[in-house]
Image 1 (cartoon, rainbow, N blue to C red):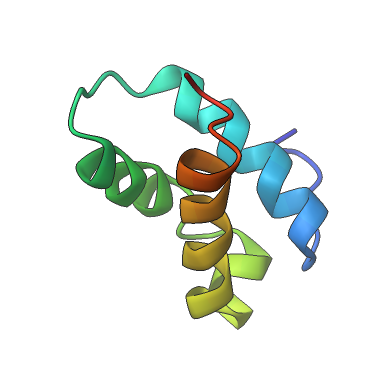
Image 2: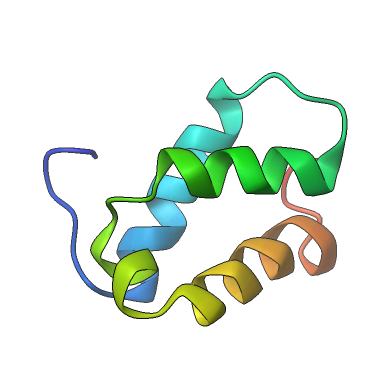
Length: 67
């Protein structure tokens, strides 16, 4: 997905999920930080960093997507 990045939440969510699977870290908040660092060039994270973080936390904590 890294070849097609768009400035929208769906593109960010797909990229976040992809990177999440590749980061080995048991500390969930730290892992979120690491994934966001890897995605630092994503257009949605650049244009809307607060919402990108909220979306990441929502995916991990509220949806419990990765448990």
